[in-house]
Length: 177
Image: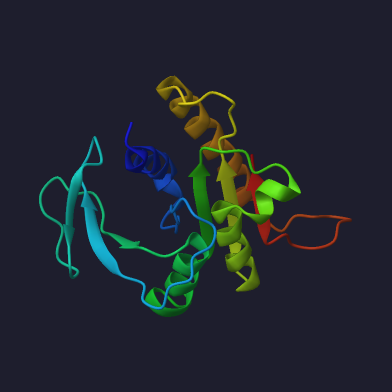
């Protein structure tokens, strides 16, 4: 299964929440002077689409305009928050990642968690989503239940964000693994 379809399915399930940012690169660190990008126009229902070098109007059957960047997830978040959409994003969803980000070793090398940390450092709420499994390749039957559960958890977090009676205040970063 193409990973872009996984992201499209999760994005379509989250549509009632409004616009969100989801960095989806598979690497945690990259040193590169020039970040390149393009526009991508997915079509319903399979997510296949076409790319363009500049923004254009949606064609019939296209459901969104995405900006794809070739940087790390944290770099993509920073570019989006501070250059492409300054002041417009109030939640960053990073992932879903098909690995486990449940320990210090995994979390500190994770691009998924790194993007959420970058967002939190910019004072923007963020959620890192990881679908931890021991099965390789990941069976396609795992995707729909994982998307459904993720959407429920994300909706719960959004509905209750900042309600931390007796706690340490509003959380900026949540990791779902």
